[in-house]
Image (tube, rainbow, N blue to C red; front, side, top):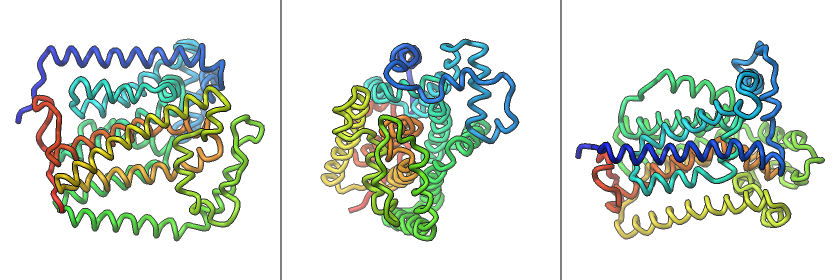
Length: 382
């Protein structure tokens, strides 16, 4: 069925995106005038007060790059509007992939509401590595959507820039990116059916576990170094009880990935307003994910259909990203929530995209036909 959008629909969508841009702008000033009074804004003010002279290693090191770019922006636009270019970058990192989803109005509003939670809004609307990360992860996700839909990747130069930035800022994320791109490309290239996809997924798990096992001693020794990077004088830093004995990194990985994503524990949430807000946000996110997964499983059982691309593809990306995030967030709830924002939009948009495809392949799509491109590969398996 041909895909068409009327001028009225474009106008409505433009209003929604304009409103979302204003939300981002609000968070920029909220962060500077309100949130900064409750907690520190990381290195934002240092970035904006950075030297005018660009450092020699700015093009391959994230901190000098931020010092150079944000320092220049701060000198030109001032201490407040100096964050504007980074806010625009994070806005584009959301707009570019979400615009490829072709969502109806209500679903677009719902998705953007999930991407308007305070922690995400604050940390990605100021001069921060998180804002840059939202941009390059969004561009990478848009390229993945093209691969999933069997379309040629447009704007390869921008994608190349995004991959370069990912290698500079968050090279560890490339593991998850490589995993989901490889799984999807192989599935598409060889037109694998449901059982072949399951076999490929199992192979990916075995391969990943083998790599972790081979480097277990190195990973274990690196985990013992992590507590030194968290100041014991910081009010939110926890005592290191998670990496004490040999191979604790692996033994406590499940809990560590959970707490590094959620941030505060219940006790910590009750002790500080900012922690309570972060905990409530995390519970909202997990509740939305859980409710949609439950809905899909119920439909999947009733229809006797399984979308392996959804379950396997998203699991691979989420597992590897959460695993590499876990060392940076397990010891400090503030760091956990802040660093989470770098990949939060990526996982939310990826999940929503694959969930809609899975529901459509199960025959339960509630999408209006004039908004939906009928190019989904239907995967059936009993």
